[in-house]
Image (cartoon, rainbow, N blue to C red; front, side):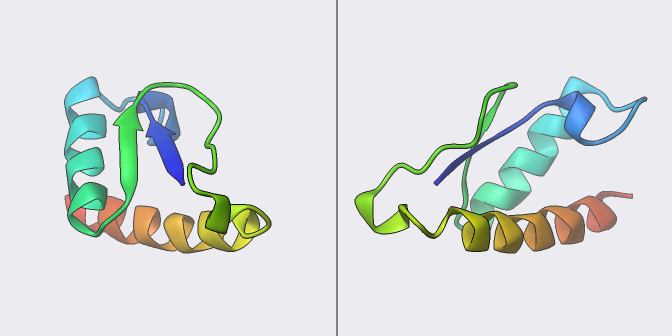
Length: 70
């Protein structure tokens, strides 16, 4: 599944550099993440029907990476 992150996903005073750092941290954990404001999309047929579960796992890693940035 491809995920998209931009400053507004992080917080009101977040910078593009912070978003890019978070993206790199998530990529290191194996996620397919790009900079931008788009809808997250399934990219493999095996992901269809699993979007909610994948988004939940991604959210957990997202929050963990975010807490490690501060």
